[in-house]
Image (cartoon, rainbow, N blue to C red; front, top):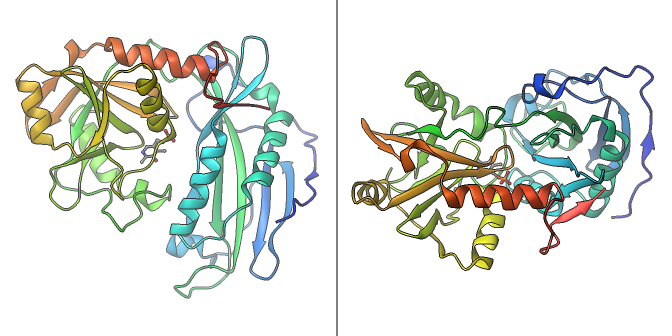
Length: 356
Ligand SMILES: *Cc1c(COP(=O)(O)O)cnc(C)c1O
C-alpha cells in the first residue's frame, strides 16, 4: 500500500489543558484527532488530522448492531530531556491487525499508520503532561460504518486515533489491589475473541466487575471458560505470580490477550536470569502455594498501570493476603525498570523506544 498524503486541518479553537492532578482517566481529549476511511473498492483512503469533534453516523451503521470494532491502547511519555517517547508502538499496530483479522476488518498498513500516529502526537505534544507517572494515552480504533442490517462484514470502515492526557495511575503511591476470582461468568474461550481487543470482551465483563466491586474488590480474575480452573487474566491486565522464587504467568492459550507489558516483563526477567515460566496454573494450585507459604508476590501487567500489585485474592470466600498487602520487591523492581525505559530514564537496550 502506498502512503497516502496526510491532510492536516488545524483547530482554531484550542481547549485549555487540565491540571495533571485533576485528570480522571479517559475523559479529556486533545484538540485534534486522526481519521481515515475504508471503502471495499478503494481500500483505506483520505487520511487526515482534523479538529477533535463528534462524528455523524447513520443509525443503521453496522458498528451499532453487530459490534464489528477493534481498538488499541498505548502511551506517549515526555522524557526529562524533553523528548517524546513511544513504547513498542509497532507491537500495538501488529496486534491491531490481528484483532482486525479476527473481526473480519481489513488490515491497515502499519508503516503508514505509525507515521500518521507520530504526526498526530507531534502536533499535540503540548498535551503530554510532564509530572512523574503521567502520559498521553493514545487510543486507535476501527468501526464498521456501512449502512446495512445484514449480518455480514461491513464494506466500509473508519479508523481513528484520539489522544487523552492521563494522570498518575498511582497518585497516592503504589497501592496493592484486591481482586475477586470470578466463578460464574466467563470472559473468553479458545476459538472466541479473547485474543482480540474488541468491544464485546469488555462490556461482557461488567456484570462480574460489578459483583467484585460490591464485595470491595477492584477487579476480576478470570478463570478458563471450560473447566473454571485455570487462571487466565484480570479485566484489562495479564497476571503474574511469584511462587517459591519462580515467576509464573498463564501461557497464551487462545483466550488470553497477548499483552505487550506481559511480553516485555518476560524478556526483562529472562535477561535478569530470574526464572519465569508461561504455563497453565489452576486456582487450586495457587491456593495450595498460598497455604504452603510459597506465594510471594502477585501483580497485574498492562499499559494503564504497567505493574499493579495484587494484595488480596478472594476465591469462594477464601482470602489470600499476598506479601502482607505490600508491593513485593520484584514487582517494584520490574515497575522501576519498565517505567524507567518508557520515560527515557534508563537505557533502552532492547530498542523498545520510538522517538516521535
Ligand atoms: C490491553 C489488555 C491487556 C494488556 O495489554 P498491554 O499491551 O500490556 O497493555 C491485558 N488483557 C486485556 C484483556 C487487555 O485488553
